[in-house]
Amino acid sequence: MIKTAYRHQIVTLVRRLSIVAILLSLLVIMRSALSGSAAGEIQSWIAALGPWGPLALGVIYVIGTIFMVPASVLTIAAGALFGLGLGTVTVSVASTLGAALAFLIGRYLARGSVERAIQSRPKLKALDKAIDEGGWKIVAMLRLSPAVPFSLQNYFYGLTSIRFWPCVLTSWVAMLPGTFLYVYIGQAAGSVASGRGKSPMEWGLLVVGLLATVAITVYLTRLARRRLAEISPTVETEASHSSAALPSVTGSIRNTATLAVAALILVFGAIIQAKSGGLGHIIVAMFGPPQVVLAEKYADISSLATFDHSSFDALLHRHVSEGGWVDYDRLKEERALLQAYLETLATAPLDELGRDEKLALMINAYNAFTLQLIVEHYPLASIRDIPEDRRWDDVRWNLAGNMMSLNELEHERIRPNFREPRIHFALVCAAVGCPPLRAEAYSGTRIEEQLQAQADYVHKNPRWFQLHEDESKLALTRLYEWYGGDFEQVADSVLKYAARFAPKLDALLACGKQPAITWLEYDWSLNDTANRR
Image (cartoon, rainbow, N blue to C red):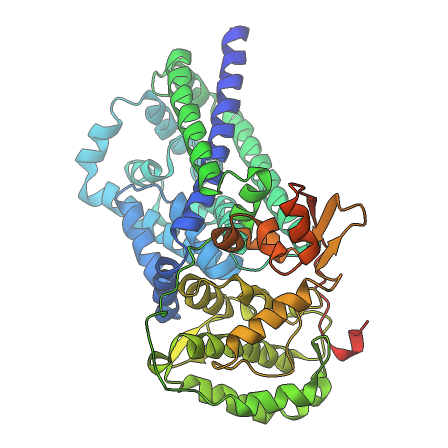
């Protein structure tokens, strides 16, 4: 008996580790698969639904509950799409409504079918008796620690003596902890998928919150099991003798082995997807910006059309000093002029422009949108002081008649359409650690010269590039870590790409020497003239 219990513990542990490995691997693979246009279409569809989004998901949830489709994926999706508060409300209402409808179907419309479905389950017979004696208390215990799957419970209660409203209200309250946990997981996954990184404190709070939620849910589950055993020992007795209650050790081992093999295959696939770059690449693939395939989509488009950036150019000349420092106090006084430039971006003839004019327009738009975002919330110490939902993922910026977020503009409109990693030295996130904002607008006629100047500046400044005196180590900006795939597509490796702008590094590589790469701390302080160093 002891050996059997020990085997079950090992099998359970392996199964849980395999599930975690599968989920993490799928996250890596799906982040690449859904980057670019596919992600843009999904995000645009969700954004287009507006306030109807939660209602649409709720309707799907109710239908899935009635047809006994596992709802955990939808619960996680609600957290990723709508956040913790709205996601929890959406799922709580939808799951309760679905459970109520299934209860009514089981009691009045499909009683015979449900009765036949539970005939071979001795545990359900014991539960029926327990509910007869304990009423809503047993329902609460079962919802917290289900001895019966959620979907089957909904129909099963319709056959018992419990009344409709006590069952529905008890189910609603008792299902909240589990709902909150899965929505929290979804919110965490959504945060992971955002383009820009989080601070260590933000990650710490996210992890602590998730662990606390898991701990509370586990505690309630165990408490419910003990109380259920105390209220109705018959349930535990019948369950232990039921062949359906616990699979055989042999069957569990066989199923767990299959799950473990699937996990190993997916982990291997995730490593390949992350370009086999080791743990660092895998972590970046999971938590960093989406990976994309760089391509020159507009190289063959020739056009004499241009776009006038003179008003933005004048603002930059007045308010940006050498090194990319911005006088936000003075810029805020001319906010109307910045807003006027943004209005011209909304009507820009993007489709009529040639390749270089398109790229200049998109870079200027990204930087202008970012300046506007800071001015709206100024004074502040960092762009990350702005609420997350109003930062890089806020679909509010109009470029050529298309509403988009800063992340969409960078990861879906620029990176996949231009084979040009130097854009990472031109797009400015209003932080000290990001490359400097130029005191001039980008121009289609000078884009090559300007991008080259930006790259040269970054690789001569110790804020972003430090080759140690003994030439054994190279400290690089984390832009090279976050967007390593972009640089590698053009130059095979991060070192070779950086060497294009650093003659001393180029000479080292020519001699067969490769310094070890370390990453410089990314300073998220605002690139305000008040912070100038």
